[in-house]
Image: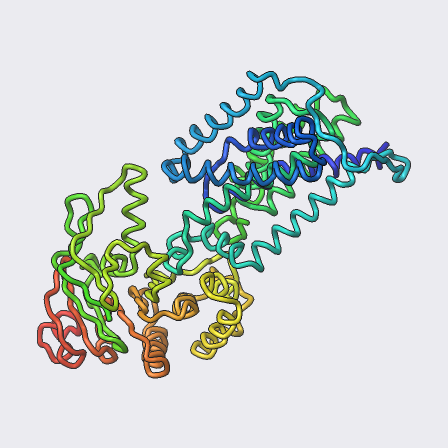
Length: 290
Length: 248
């Protein structure tokens, strides 16, 4: 049971990291808290579902198209809405939350609710590892999570756009005086964040179903992980994902599933009481933000 | 190369620069000398175009109204309303005051970030050149820039501006907060830069003593207005300058 709990705790932690990493990337670079993040996650899943079931495209093609459309939606959201309110935290939150609310409630209004709205698993197979059953989709989630973190690190350290992301994150005006267009980079950061939400949806949704209410849950989980880790810190997001992920699974296995949420919230409360700026928040001025 | 005609900058109703006229010829080092709040940084922001970005962002959030009158010509082209990133592409690069570096990244990464507009081989060449110009930097290349001393940060900041291979380098108070020894290192580097590359430099500074000997031409700015101009030697010989800046 212990090995099984650890395995599922790792999977749960990677899921939380995947849910939060896009939100964190956008905030770390542009300073925009994208409260439409959960809605973009769900929108991408519905798009994949529609392309798969209505246009009968192969799943991988449908997923790629929906990831691209969601990425584009992120860019459009920045250019047409966020650009006008950027730098005003409350307006950014209200504007993005409004957009998210509109997207989610539109799907609810159109009747996209029910267990039939889900995405297929990529490989329908399961294994026994140290006596614990685990399916291929969960293993795939861990692989995609690890690949995505490595890819993000390589991207932000070895490409000119990635380096520009880091420049803007640290000092926008200095970056601007070196020819880095801050609005362009902020647009890319919001769209990349949306794209990461779409990738997370493609790989995580097959474990459950698509529903508008899931969009709110995703936003809350992303926020919780980012706040515990220290907003804008990728290392913080990964550590916080594992703190919450393990707390949830171990509570589920050894106490009761009714206590899962309480223990997670207690973990958040304890971390924030001890370090109000999050696990890696205090060192923000001198440590990597992305 | 650069001509500033009747430049006026208002922050709301406060006049920061008043009817300023400046000319910079190719290959010159031009000094803009003035005390605190004289308008030096506003002038540098106007020349680099940062003031345009500030104006756009202030307008977006309904903040301070920034108004710019007059003309800035670069090689005969009016760039008064040109965005800062486009000016960098034209070859005008500003090294802002107070060591503008990316503190969380290493020295090498700072230089790579600065090479955003350039191709990789050009960036690598420029990094070699910067390391050659500032021999203290290569051994610090893996250190986080935030942990460097003030002088090292200033060398890095100038190095970052050089990575862009500017035609016109704007240095805003590069000696601020440095020890006299470090001030001399920076001054020597700028003089060496001119000798080796023939680059045009506009340097704004409140410390006249180390700057005046190396400039070809200087402008004294007080309260946003031009009060005096001349060659470096003429300014050094001027009794008013001697009294105000050298305490003689």
